[in-house]
Image (cartoon, rainbow, N blue to C red):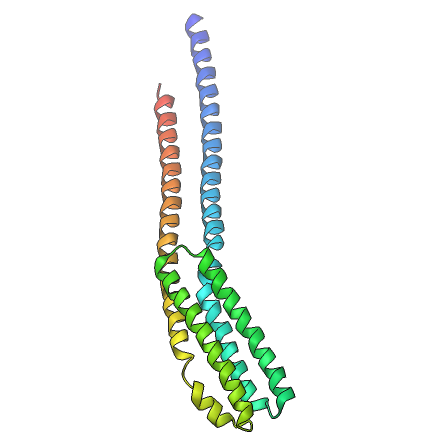
Length: 210
């Protein structure tokens, strides 16, 4: 009689332990899944957060090309002082937009290789503006001859484009380094979560034998 009661008590104990073990495994699985989810979600959020700062040079290339096109438009569409002033105003607006974006990019960047190139672009950009401004007046005085005005400033935009391309390459390189560190951190968190789950499963298996 005693042995039967002992057997039944042990069975109830094993059943209770088995139920708790299953519940523990289920809870551990969801905790593990949550940790992985938050790790990957946090990684995506952080990668997206660094996307915009490292797109500065690329965006500047696009805006600077528009600025150069505005100068070409001025030469093609200006036939008198009124149209010249109107087209020069459009050029100046785009110039200020590019200059402002370059200054903002310089302030938010902490990469020396990028900052050197952006500062060089800012300085050359201002010099080009003064040269365009001078040629604008010469253009009016020459009777609005676009060929002469264009010849005086032809090619001065190329060094600036080269600077922006170099800055963009430096930014993309820095972005890859940062992304690599973030991915490594996320991978480490996932590996730690997996190890914790494996250890918990081993403990459950070991305890179930006793």
